Length: 203
Length: 203
Image 1 (cartoon, each protein chain N blue to C red):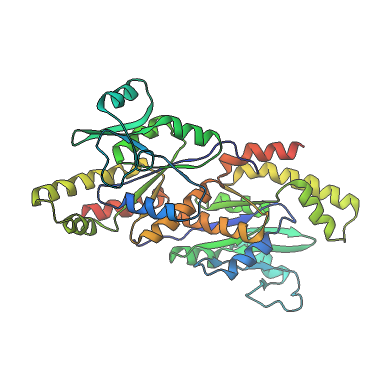
Image 2 (image 1 turned 135 degrees about the vertical axis):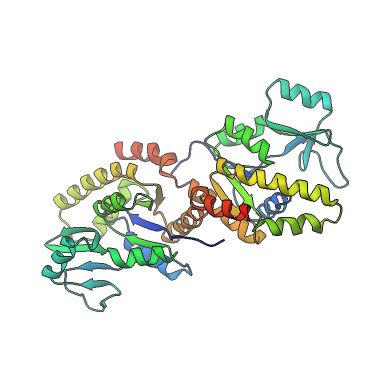
């Protein structure tokens, strides 16, 4: 059965939940999913490569992209911009490839405005205590900062309602299997397929 | 994360598409899915066992079950009744187990009236030509009967619209993997989980 368009899959969730780790583990699996590369104004860290980890942009270039609507979503963290270039995502989807974005919650909500037909997956810590443990495990935060992050996480959990799926990140490989299952299931959704089958019956 | 209720999964599709084969192959896999056993008035065939293949009922017993609303769905084929006892399905779901029913299209639509929250999967032949090949391959049908089955199949494809998912039965093992993925994904649906997470945040 030929497909017309690919899926836009948005993987998001609270800070510290392990989005990057899960997305990295997913890349190790043999799937046909394409990975969107973000643009940023922050400097490359050691070992990072242009077009692999990020597209590195000057502040002026990034602001031009914002003004010319070349970003599906963007945000500013600690004086740097981060965003998702629209062109790659749209090209892949139009060719019938599924594309995944791994982004922060606020970015995911921006994408939802442009792509309501996307598949929005919320990665959840097994519970808030576990999130606290993870954040404390980093050992670089003050108590105030930790409490603040907990409060942010609670707000973000309230945002879960805007998503289609909730994937618990109890174990990275289990989370990856759930995400793969969601992609497979979404590709079997009747609403995405029925027009193709109706053509088949007409023949 | 504790679950409250299990899923009711309804696997259905046109006559001859291979529902029984796919459901049989799914049982070979290590899943937690429970399988509903149908009731019938037809006689046991060699090797069939009471409570494994079917619950064998007299016509009088079956009609009593109909009148006392003990069946989720039933139908009559070639003078025999076939139906799904309600009790087992409801018990399993209430205990948090996912239950699968493998039934004909008309039965699936009956179940949908009682269990609109069920997960309705339509098993599709790769195309109608393939369905014709399969039916002809049985070697026991007249041309008239085959043409009639084709016409029925076209009508059933129109029924696809009432389902949530369409699974192509191009290869049995691929169809099984898709069904397993759908069950996993449905268990990650935000709408099924959000109240549990909201309680977690309150703590």
